Length: 425
Image (cartoon, rainbow, N blue to C red; front, side):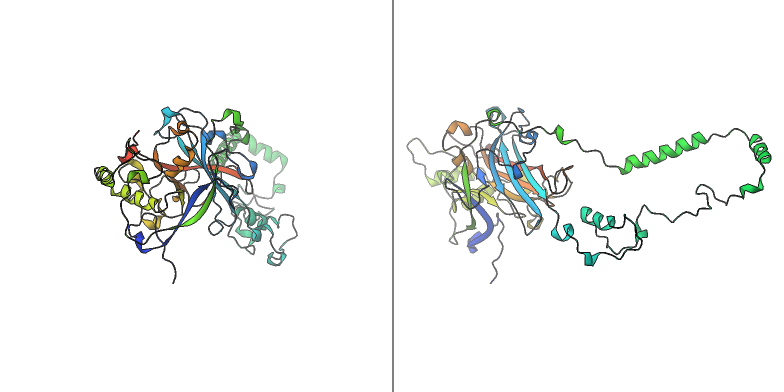
């Protein structure tokens, strides 16, 4: 029997044992995935770094630290794309809970399909005319992924016109009379009797009209690569978070009825224990119910079944919301499951396409990154970070096919206090 798919926020998860959500766990030992990691310094796709502007805090304008880099190749969706995701966060305490202090970058390289890059000679159209320009039709199809058949009529070129007759004037509505029927004197007399002509004005008007059309049909020039801000050396970057490898496995859920977890059970420390180390579940439940946020109860219950997860991944799936009462929760709560969890996410600024949910970081990420020095995570008081990406996996503008580019993606930050749950201590 085929396994039924389960959305991350489905309330009836107890009837399933495994979901379509891939969970990531921090590991100190190397895993099969040699790229994905928490913390550390970024490893760029093919060693080509992104512009430093994409990893600069929009509040204090300083470089941010890497939270996560993830290998996100999706051969079933984008067979000719190489994909990577990066999430950065500002470590300046004054910047916490402000827009632009956590940013996401998608690295992508679009490779040409093998069938287009090596066209078979058997499919080549028979030559209609021996001309060096004939092969350019197939080359254009290959470069621009055109759907035009290689057997299309050559006259289908939209910029082509019927050949002009050598005896016709393209700017005249009637055939020109035989010039030999005029004598030089009569022609000179005829021209002299006419008022002075102003061909320059007509020509200038024609040129202006053509130039205007050319401006409208020509895309704006892309900024040269030299304008990209180079990635800085490590000594100019903030201290890195501890580095962990990432191991993955599909989410397994206990089919038994779920119980409301206590606050200490959430490993990120959403609330700390009392001074004597004891805190009753009843007190926790009363505190949770006072927020009237059943979404958080579902979030906490789901995470405690796999408490060491640091990320949840499901391209086109549904995010597990930390709250429905904050700005991100209100934005995404009404998204239909069929919309990939992102029908109301901001559209892709690079190409204008819709965005879909791809992954989110959980509170246990904070626990892992703060393990060595609590001060290093003073600015991280979020409940979850939701990353939405372009559904078309577009490439960076101005970057040729076959080269690496980077595009900024949407990160929805659900802060702890915004959801009505504040860390104590």
